[in-house]
Amino acid sequence: MTGPVSMIERMTLILEAFDAHTPRLTLAELTERTGLPRSTTHRILDQLVALRWLEHSGHSYVLGMRSLELGGLAVAHHELRQAASPVLAELHQRTGAVATLAVLDRKDVVFVERHGRGLPSDSITRVGGRAPAHATAAGKAMLAWLDDRTLGALYGDRLGSRSPRTITSLDALRTDLAQVRSRHGLAFDREELCLGAVAVAAPLRGTGRASGALQLAGDPRRVSLERLAPYVQEAARKVSRTLYPATPSRIRSRTVEQPAASEWPPGALDQLVQGIGGDYWL
Image (tube, rainbow, N blue to C red; front, side, top):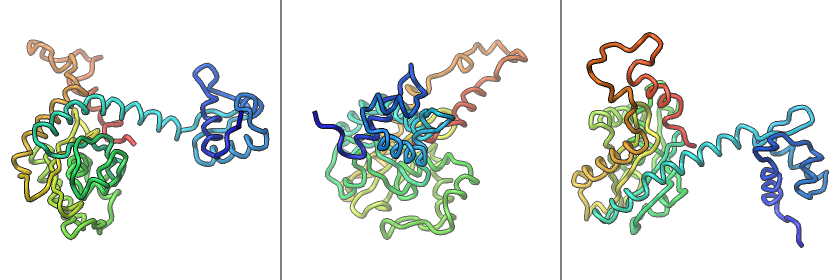
């Protein structure tokens, strides 16, 4: 049997050696489990530690923060896609527009689900595709829920341009995002990402930051964003209700005037959870 040839195969062997029963392994144990030469294993381990995939503690190795972060993102993305995929399929069928699900990764959006095609932006909005958040409807639908300090830390005074219509200044972006908030998260891309494609999006959120956004895109000669807007808004509400169902504190009888001193005030726990990780998936 031929052994693993590529570096990726060898790295995968090492990472897969860890499991719930043995979260901590020594160099000797990893060499035995993977069947790789000791010198090769040691060299790859050094690289994985440097890249934060593993941590080296004493004589053993454990999964590092990068592995844990990626695992958390995979779970979160799976939940998002599971909730949004049938809704996106229905959106595409009802409107004929390209329906996508996107998540925010700092200044970019990453598209994790898509139904439909036929636009100049297809190569950008493919599953796994990445685009500047400020140039997309989905991105603006999520950026609108960041506080101004966070937004300022992400962007300088000048923003990158993807088309002649892209917003290129932070002040203009702030103005646009204020309008998005006034429309309860509804955001537009009027050929800002790509000429020949327009889009409208709405966020997926509970009480905090947006964890994702649904977007409908089409040819500006054939679609009206204002007519598509109610479809994407209702779809986003539907998915958000699935992701963030009402908690007992929200449906408590109105006869209860004050919570006990040891209880969370209504909605406070939701706000805490959303504030900790509502927007980061990647």
